[in-house]
Image 1 (tube, rainbow, N blue to C red):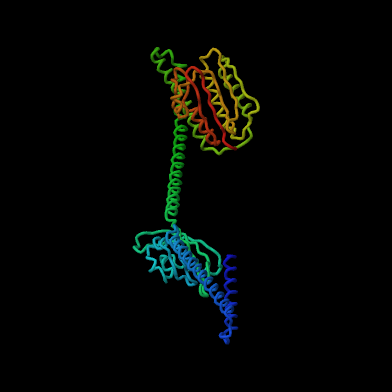
Image 2 (image 1 turned 90 degrees about the vertical axis):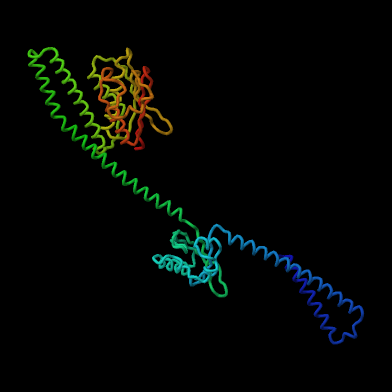
Length: 431
């Protein structure tokens, strides 16, 4: 740039000197000496040479500008974004090939069209308001509009970005970028529909669960009275009418009595299971260590003939629902007590450890254990890995544990091996 400025200054100086020489000699050229004529000719030759160089530089500059213009035109036409130039009235003055493709109209036909007329009639007023806002504020602005291509069969959504770019011949011009957001819009709509469908199904599932729990509660509650009556009559028969029955009848009555007792236990567990989800949680600070000791004391009093080595870690405190946590520890410790019944030296342990910034609680025993390939059945209601002849139970205890833990936002799982004991782990979420 500096070099061109200096060259232009030199050219102007040569021209000035040549003109001065011509003015001096214009009226009296015959009296000029040969030296003066030679000097004048030399200056004119130098000026002519500089002029030719300048003309050549101008040709090169013009050629570079032409190449730059071609490159700009190619970039403009092949840009992945549509571009339009609008005047103050929203009339299209220029359009690139991408804009033509997005709008479904030839570039020549787009020229001199009112841009809002390309928008469907029901959205046209909003488009006029959008342009008016941009023109008035003189600030860039974006908006999404729906378009119908010339065939009126294909609907697209374009995001417009409009800004003031120049003043041409006293009139303002505005640049508008067009980006196809059709797929994004469809994805959002599909996501909304999916969310609505998921919400509907969740509500249906919640309603079904509520109905099922209500049904289970009603059935269990309604069965309780006739079952208790049956049990009472069987006990009366066993106590007062034994001399009227032979051994076979006595065995039948004992079978009825034991099964009514078992049915009563199942109903109690079923009611406990349904109540877990029906009742609101009451969060308090809980001393799990002390709660575990109380559970062990109750279990020991029910089984006074058992000698079990129990180890409980001190200082385990959590925030949760005391009623639910009592069910969790009661069932896990009772299971550990039950499945170590055949061990000469029974050991049960309750503790906790930190893993991945999470507290994991566990109940461990050295009892009969279980085969890990059946672990998925452990927490399903009424699914048992052992028969009643081996270990008495209803198959609901661990289902209660899982539901109570989930209500705390935690998870529960187990590890074990046949004949080598079992460990039940649980977490309590972030409360």
